Amino acid sequence: MKPLLITLMLGILLAGCEGKPDNFQAMVQQLDKTEKDIRERQEKMRQSIREYNATHPEGNRIDTTSVENMGLDQAQVETLNRMLTEEKDVSYRGLLTEVVTTQKQIEQLQDQVRQLQTQLPAPYVVQRGDSHHEVSLRFLMENHGLSEQEAREAVDKTALVDELAPGMKIWMLYKDGELGTYVTQGTASISPGRAQRRARQRVAKKIETLTGERNVARSQVDSLREIQEALAERILFLRSEESRLQADIRALSKEKEDALAKGAVSEKQRLLLETQLNSVSYEVDTLERFKKNGIITDPLFGSPRVRSLRNVRFARSHDLRESTTLTFEARAFPGLAKIKQVDVFPSTLRPGEDFTVSYEGGGARASVKIIKSDTFAGQKVMFALR
Image 1: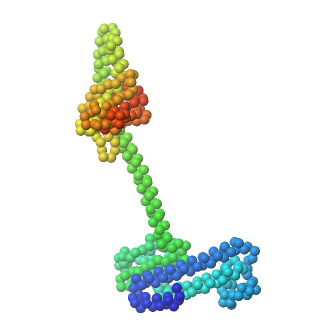
Image 2: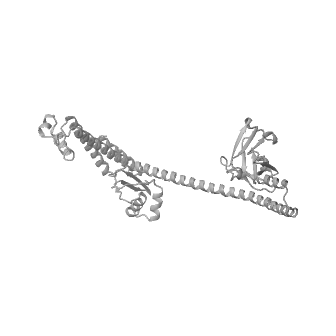
Image 3: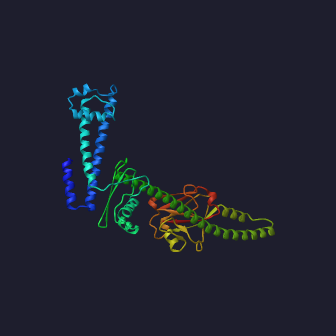
């Protein structure tokens, strides 16, 4: 942008709405844009010189004869010599012309910056540890005599930059009870916009990390809850088994007394006892019927659990010495068109380790294959079909 155009723009801004924060921000934004343009042109020029020096390491400085032969005028020679005091010498005409042209553009932009700065209040240069909020409060209280409460009310109505870096510039204007403030890059190595994006990325990363930790914690809690529920369910079966064992002990004690009285245990009694010890006592029905009878609860979240065994008789028995497979037909259970799943209780019995379930005839029947007979022998088990 040419100096004349900048001057006209400033005149329009200041004459139209002099002192208003909106125009103030527009001027600061133009200043920031101009300074950014200067930085970009300077870096482009340095990069061109670095690239040329990397491919032409033979010469360090350019001599006067070489400059004269290139047809540069005196102003170009002076500009070039000033630039070469900070850069490695080069001897390539095209590069020198680019350097001189770029430097002239930079000087024009710097003139524009100086013109803008004369129309703006002096900015505050950010130091390490500064916050936009605290700097704005100090500005209002120290420069305009506002109380802390008045300053906070004015700042609370103003958009602030959360992430600052040393070298950034904070521009502030207070007019008619309204605070205008804007942050530019200044000499900082990062722009305010990029600093905010990085801050948001850090916050997003932190949220993601905390969310992951929360999910892990929830998973652990859910696992502990499942273990607790499984143990509570297992206790129900153990208590039921305890009642059966006590009854068996009483019966055996009586049989022992009778046997001692008779002098021996009959073969029939011995075979009956062996069968009991090698058989699984079980009850099978549909999950819906078990739920309806208050035996199984099926929460919205979580797996079905046995709630009570009070009305379960475990009237069926299967001798595992004869077969380790139990087969259930869907047609034997009213309302069950086909068997899609078999739940085995207590749920401490592990599918794939203690037993497996297979389905045949499109769900017409389901077979439970007992892998570990010792785990099932002499125990009470429930099979819920659905």
